[in-house]
Image: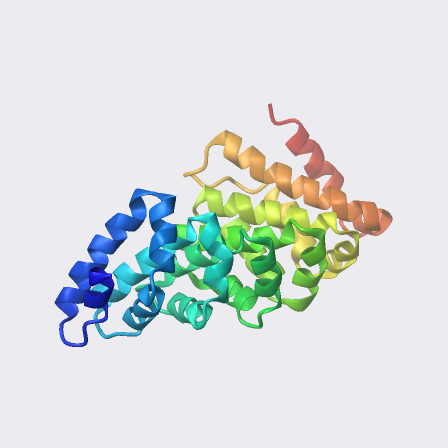
Length: 273
């Protein structure tokens, strides 16, 4: 309680920073400590005020603590429902200083089924995650964003709506799969496209999306980036093949009529040892 009192100190950012660092260390010790901190009267509201304060160091520590709290399953639903917390996290995503940790908080919150349903319906969250994936400049940030989006796509309840309601999703995933330099982000994006194609209703629209099929076909014979190992390149090509196969289940004759080169390129991939 004394440290929470210091965190609410109106005079000294230094005292707040020192108190916040001690509380962060305490929270990292165990899940029970995390839960205890969360339930302390006034603690979370003090963290939210710190996020809005002028001290960047205090903002960073507060963001770290919120991330630590979100790593305890017992806190997830209560955190999501806490007045002002989700809004503060979304605001943090839009700042360069706090973006990475804030996206990780969203990823953790989405582990809870009820949270996930409400997050999917929230007007800002999905577009914001797509924007971070498209424009983020740190691998860990983009990975957290695409993993959170993938969590929605892996459920039939959301897969179709996710595709229909977000026109920028397919071009962003395609851009990331083909142009991103970090393998983990490329791989999750490729699996994401594959998951979208599992939903039969999505296949015709994916087929009709300008440049989508051509880009997947070209990826089958493209020179792999130097930083990728042979197994990683093959894994990405396998994802592209599986996506094409799923789409072909819906539009088989049209696919091979419009893209006669597809059969040859598939054969070349199949010859890779």
